[in-house]
Image (cartoon, rainbow, N blue to C red; front, side, top):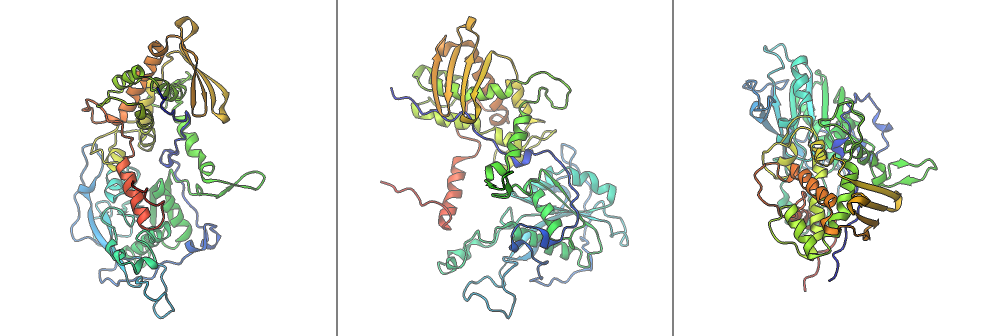
Length: 497
C-alpha cells in the first residue's frame, strides 16, 4: 500500500498579534527621516469634498453610557457616520498633466467612523479634551469598538472624545468596485490598487482634520497589530495631525528586506519578523495556566506538540492507524490515505488564531472575525490549549540537528516497549516499533492533542464531530486567490481537463 506523504515536522507559526503589548509613545519624527519609501512622505491630503458643519464635531444626540454583557463598551454605545474620502489621495492636482482616461480624479468612497462622546464634557464650552482615535485595521470597525480595552479605560479619565475609524475596503467602507468591470479601466489600475497603508493613513489624517479642523485638540492614535503599525506611522508621517500614538503589538519594522545581518547583507521577510515566532514559542513553554505564576517547572507543551505531527503521519500509513486517528479526533467521515495531510493541516491550524486571540479575558474577537460566530474563546486560549499538552506522558525528543530538522522521538520508555520514530525534514521512519500503533504513550499524546485543538474547533462546546477543514477556510483562500488572479497579481487558474 502506498504510504501517505508526511508533512514537515516544523511549521513556523507567525503571529503579529501575539507580540507583547508594549505601548510606545512615538516622538515627533520628521517625515523626511522615515526611510520607508518616498510615497509615504506626503503632506496632509487636500480635502476633496467641502462639508458645512459646526467648528468642532458635536453629535446631535449624546449616547448613554452602556456596557456589553462582559462589562465593556460596544457598538450599542457609539454613533456611526460616513465621511467622503478620495479613492486616491495622491492623484495629480487639478490643472496638472494627468494620465488621460484613468478615471481617478474626483472618485470617492464613504468611510465609516464611529464616535462616543459620553466622556468629553457635559456643556458646550467643555469640548477641548483630547480625541482618542483608533486607526482601524483589517476587519470591520465593529470588531475594534467591541473588543478594544485601553481606549475605553483611559477615555473617562481624560474626558476624551472616542473615535474609531474603519480601514478602507473593510466593513462598510468599500469603494464601488463595479468601476473596474470596464476593461479600459484595468489598463490604469486594479480594484486593489488603492488598498495601501499610505492611502489609509491619508484617510485618517483627512478625517482628523474634519473632526477638528483647527487642530486645537490633542489627538492620540491607538491601534494594535497592523492597526498599531498605522498608529505609529501616523505619528511619524503626520506629526501635525496627532500628538502621540499608543501602538500595541506593532512590528513597524517587520517588513521584507528591512533588516540587515552583522555583515551588512539583507535578510528576508521571514527572518525579519522572526521575533513573532520566538514570542509564540515562548508562550507555549510557559509552565503555568493562566500564565503569570513564578513556577519553574518545565513545560512539556512545546515538545509534545512537536512530537505529535510525525506521530499522525506514522498512524496515517495504515488503515488501522487511520481508524485510530478518526476515532481519536472525532472525525465526521472515514479517513482515506490521501486525507492524512488534511488532518495535519487541520490539527496545526488553530495555533495561529489562538495566538492572535491570546487575551487575558474571554473574547469573541478572533472567532467572530473568522466567521465562527459570536462565541468567546477562554482567557489565555493558547495557554489553555497548551495546558492539555503540558504533561510528562513519556515523550523524549532528541534534537540531532535542529537546523536540518533531524530528530529522534521516543514515545514511552524501553520498559514500556516504546515506539521510536526518526524524522529527517518531512520523512518519518520507524526506528523501533515497540508496541507500534498500540503504544500507550502515543495514544495519550494523540488524545491530549485532540483536547488542545478542541479549545478552538469546539469553542461553542456543541460539536459532536469534526470535518478536517483548517481554521483558515479553504473556500475563502480560493476566493481571495480568484480575486488576485482577476487583477493580474496571482498565478493563473489551473487548467481543467
